[in-house]
Amino acid sequence: MPISLPDDPARADVLAARPTLWLNPAYRSGPIPSGLPVSAADVADATAAWARLAPVLARCFPELQATGGAIRSELIEALALRDALGLAAHDGRIFVKADNALPVAGSIKARGGVFEVFLHAETLARAHGLPTDALDSPDARALFGRHTVAVGSTGNLGLSVGIAARALGFRAAVHMSFDAKAWKVDRLRKLGVEVHLHQADYTSAVEAARLAAEADPMVYFVDDERSRTLFLGYSAAAAELAAQLAAAGVTVDGDHPLFVHLPCGIGGAPGGVAFGLKAIFGAAVHCFFVEPVQSPCALVHLMSGSDELVSVYDVGLTNRTEADGMAVARMSAFVAEVMRPLLSGVFTVADDDLFRWLHMAWDTQGIMLEPSAAASFAGPSMLASARGQDYRAAQRLSGKAATHVLWATGGSFVPQEQFDAFVAKGAALRG
Ligand SMILES: *Cc1c(COP(=O)(O)O)cnc(C)c1O
Image (cartoon, rainbow, N blue to C red; front, side, top):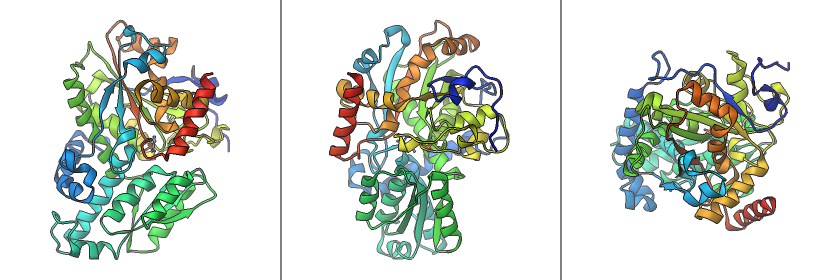
């Protein structure tokens, strides 16, 4: 049954798959409301859990030795990129949060998938009377080798969960949607992960993984549509960003707004990060999701105001995009509930622009992105548009010096030939 979206200034653009900015009428400025299924205390617990896991992470992944087991990325002030995007000093300071280069998984999924797999390993070890600070011991590995971790993914979550699971000696089963890139499949198979390819979209791949896991008590399912653990793993990025902003001399308060632009698929990664930021900065941080014009699942669902999940198919869109990290037709109900009062808005981007920005990031700053990861680059211009000015006026931000963080979500694991092809496509489009 096609559904009709309510009257809204962005509705016509959304239905015609034109890039646009939607402002969330349910947004409530201020601290995190009570009654949500997650709280600021959960974010603090997640941050503590990451610290507890750091020693074993450093032993499992040699690339983490330099940070003592912390999985973190740089915050880069992008002056050359700002110029190339046609922005000026009055648009504010522009930073790229370089999760494209996150160690272990090469995407923001390292903050979620690795977290959930290692917490599951702790739980299993405890249940079998093994010490939880030696998850890499021969006894623990023997135990994990009898267990499987399963996940459904368009690619990057599968990579993150597969890499983490295999590092601890688990078996791993990854169910991929039709849009999964071949190199992600190859990389997982080389690690000994069982990859199931589905001729269907992400939602169906997750469903297949869920059914397979339900049939077997030795299989643990990482549920990207419902997992609090993934969400909270991502949320710990907020404390990391806050420290980096402080180190860069950025003040965030009522007179110095922070705009954070987050690429969105199912919503877990951007939702978790945004929730963590709200816990720290409250009304001073303004979080926007960004989605492909054909896959704006968070936008259409939140715009609909419906309690039942609305998918992009329900409004006549195709969910076809080169941005495989965001090729999701139906958002997470859990994330929808949490983000409804906390999200400032959602903007959409066209695939061709993703390639232009991918080229720009490489050309100006040497930053290696995959198409999904360039989506946040639209943020500052969206906020400078007429509707963006409406938002600033309504929030009493007009004329205030802003800082923008463009979240770059993946790319450093893209094979060189594939990346060269992305760059060539972007160069051709820029002309
Ligand atoms: C997964 C992913 C996203 C979106 O995260 P969700 O949790 O699916 O919303 C964005 N960009 C990239 C590169 C990703 O891998």
